[in-house]
Length: 457
View 1: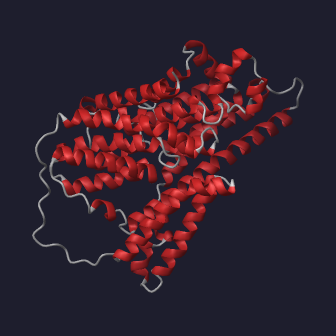
View 2: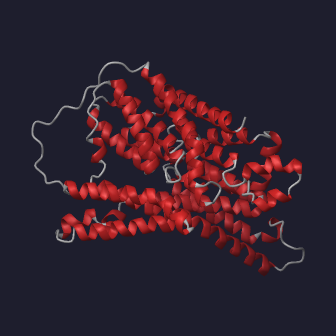
View 3: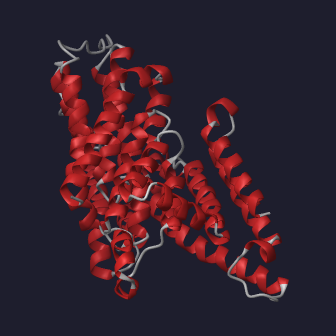
């Protein structure tokens, strides 16, 4: 049964990775994997769980498994509520066309200038929002600036790289970094200070290379002879107010956590509540047809619930392997075979280009438990050098946040940003491998080496 749990997880993982050929949503595969893994665990607790005392009753074993499930579900719920709050705020800004504050200010038609402008805007916007929402906004912007679809693909590739690089150094910019922050492996200030330089290098290397390839000017889309007469859904005041409040709510979350010591999801729910009340007030005089798409109730219908269910399923599946002891064995194997935390983190980042980075990070968090100062103080001199990498803001956690966040750019299916760009622009997988993957890999390795040079040597 111990091996059966591993087989269920591997099969489920393959179904997730092969989502498009199988035409089965990865959320369904993740949920089934989670339920089956915990079912096998609870039915075979006597033979699987090594921590149980000999002679314990089956009822005791079942109760222990259920208790572990509730414990893990509590930790996972913190991540899910945070993501749902952040996604709602971003969708609310988009419904009010708040991002026009940024997009309306891009007016260059030179390829190289536009390349750098798009890359840098995406990088910093992704840190403030998240890489998925930023990619959607920037791809929509590119459609207004570039007419030729194949030419847009080059810029879309840079958007994917920049969005993932920008999300890696921010506690709210990428779901994997958010997981590490909520799990207390890293702090908001620590992750920003240590990863902003490697993340910038991860973007600058592809931008520099592309600057020698792209020349000339772009061809903007032809304007329609007559614009459709339609009324803007929001006024400039409403648009700017919601944009500033939404951005402020997201940026306030780390400050709220520092002041109150409450979990981050409480801060994001506080910001959402402020926005909810504000939008209700400014739209209270409108009729229901105009008001509904601009309200939180209307925006909630646009939230990507399947992504939330996917995170729930995959995190529950990983936690079942943690409870059964599988991940401890994997951690020991990686330590014995690779022996270096930087090699381990870089390997996880490369794997996240092939499979989803969420389970990779979730697995690493369970494989290598967070080391407290008390445990470190009691460790032997031989153990201290290894265990010190796994304290709060330890080198392994920071390196993992960078590698898992940026490694997914190497293949277009390796990150939520890449999948979004692929779906919106119908980017060919082989084309991306041919023209963008090498750039992403060069930036990924350059950023990783810069972190090692700055903080490890």
